[in-house]
Image (cartoon, rainbow, N blue to C red; front, side, top):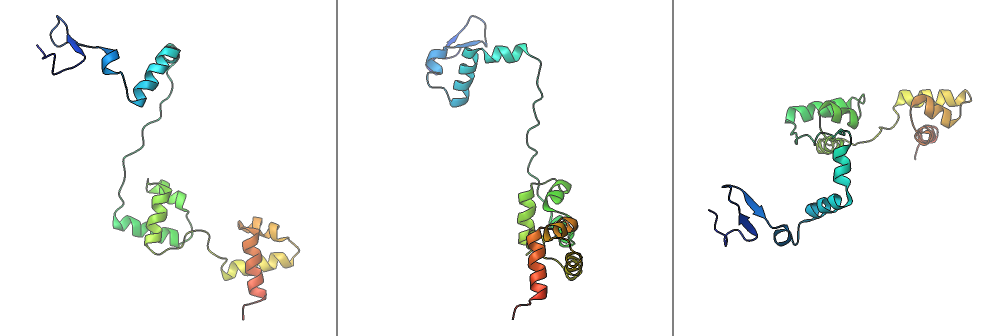
Length: 160
């Protein structure tokens, strides 16, 4: 038999192992999730949920994944090649994009789009000379028009 003084707010029943809890005394100041649950029960939301079709509950977040130094080096070399983005790397290595960015910065890489290389500048100047606007050149090259304009301006008017 449980000691009444040791379990305040509880009563024992004739059935061994069954303990009744006085809700008023024990949950006089319940934590916030319990308060929300009581309010939902009072409003009838719980019954509405139980009476309806079961809904899809998304899986919880995956556990934290630590990358090995070899994986970080491989990730850095892939990013350096310019053929992949931080989002693609995050998906490939099953980590958050912010984690990818932090690892790349730790390897001394600058994130974001790289400036136009000499071949891209030549192509942009050629397209612009054929009468395309900077917006059209940027769209065709998959680059921002301001980047194209800056690259052409630097190439035609080099700094002193």
